Image (cartoon, rainbow, N blue to C red; front, side, top):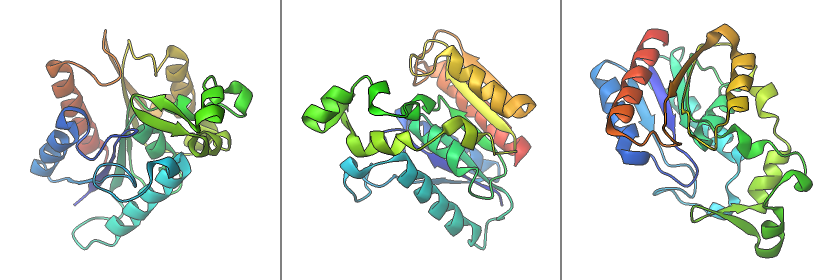
Length: 225
């Protein structure tokens, strides 16, 4: 059967907000698609030091997961896909260019997490210098994480993926402004299926919206895998 790897967001875990990864995984399983949920290193129940978290390392972890799934006797190695939420979306978009991935689904991908190329472009750099980290929703954005981002051109690299792409986001998401949407439209062109949720923020904060997000994602994956 085909399989999709679910990549959670910054400081989250394999359940994701409102247990939505669990709901999506069960929905997909009922329709013949395996879903692999996991905690990135230092997140959820995984071992590791959160201070060492970087996008580059998360991309490598996704590559290891895909390699393991490709060797699983119940799965078709030519029908593996990625889904990512927020930082997991950015991670998935980059990992998809380094691994054999059939299709890609992105929920509010945090492309702006690596938009800076030098310290002067980082608004919170003084906090990092002073404390060693910036506080983001109770989680540390470290110097290691930020400097890793200086070496990542997310748009150029993500553009190398040639398969179909689903992009879902809320219109009131401050982490996902209009220019980010424009970038994704440019790099994915007619391979992009864009779904905007009116008046919603980063985590699709209503019951109907989350149900719709699960449904449209499952439909997309079943159609494109």
